[in-house]
Length: 312
Image 1 (cartoon, rainbow, N blue to C red):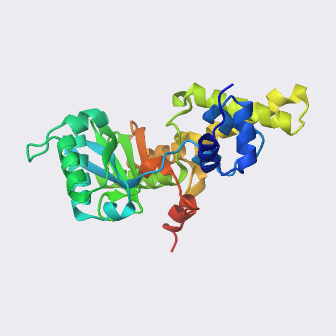
Image 2: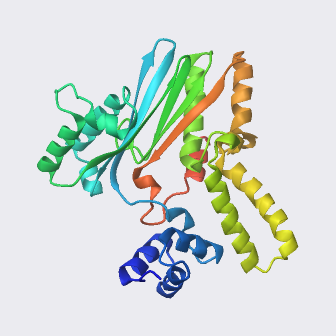
Image 3: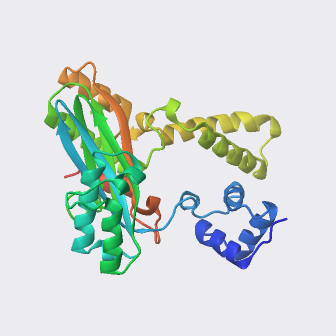
């Protein structure tokens, strides 16, 4: 059996929000495996912060950039981390984040962006190293993603913006098809605000990671057993819960936060009809939250906040 150290117990406590003794018991039951222990706590109904369990704390900024390419567009989002929020407000740091997002328009993934050359002639990684020496904090360009459409728009939205195109959550939404660009961009921005609020796991049901479904199923089965549900009913109960889980985490099936009577799928179809665009499709999205969305204290209700923006 793995040694259950005080450090391991402390880490599980910080990641799950559960008391020390329950964390120690969870680790003992799961041979010191942190992720299995988190799932065990969820199944027991003990975890206070299940959604925070897989997230990594980090400060810095998410930056977005876009450019037109013929009848289409490319947009990119990057996460540039530092040790403190104070550094994220530094002009040098913000300027670098914007420059790195522009570089990401032509490169896939953080490794390629870090190796890419800036207009100054330095690589992105060299510039990060220079900033570390200048500002005095550890930094890294941690993530980079981009989306492109041959016709249409890639709309963006930045939540908790500290400056144009810079904030704590950056979202890209790709709409492929014909139609008035300004109306398509408005639709894309609304969907991007929705994505910031709901953090979907996939665009369509078929895109949802089977491992995520099976992991959720295992947790729900164990939880049903803990609740004393009849053995012959557990599978049926869990099937219903999995269907709800898929509706909750699949973007196209989610109720639109600005109009819960309409799904995102219906929103796109209705807009396509009004624009006379039979081929309009939502082809992809990126949601990049600083530190993968860790909340060090209880944060705002993004869904309520985004919905409130449309009132009045």
